[in-house]
Length: 279
Image 1: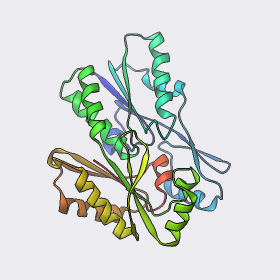
Image 2: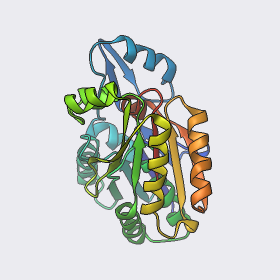
Image 3: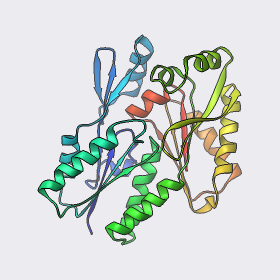
């Protein structure tokens, strides 16, 4: 069966997907002061981070419209899957579902499923990869949906940020906690809940110690790692991501480790120096 995977731009595309018609990234819009930036292939991370650093206002994002998702669903593929960032963090999931419902009013026989990643960034990437694996293994549409929903329920997201300002300004972290963390150089180790919200797992003084603690949480939460793919995304800190990869490889065996630089939305939240791990 032919298939297509639609992913909102909070998820990073693998290089081999960028010229593959079976994959489409639906862009969010980023707003820094008076500037509106489309999070597509034209996104310039360096320029974006400079604008964020210079702007006193908090950067914001706007999710794609239902009509934009509808356009992505309009294709010859028999099976269409959408993957969005957590419904607890953005309206992207609801927009994708509404676009699906509107499209099915006209094409009721089309098979479309929208996955709430309950994650973000490379969490979405791994979900898209799992869909691809299931489709290419010959599973039916219903089997793919069931298998991938189970995969999502077992997925874990972890992250450590160098800069907490965007999380604070967007209400994801209290002002007091952010100020104390910055003053004492404390780096919270953050993670995702089962519902797709953000929680604090741990903390440490300094980035290196926080990364060590994050690796400990990854190891503790990962059972039967040998058959799993782990993904790391980083915002403008490739060397840090490589050290993190090596530290994880010393502790657990995985089938594959993917390392990607953050796209626009993920760069907005991770900010310069942030790292994300999903398995």
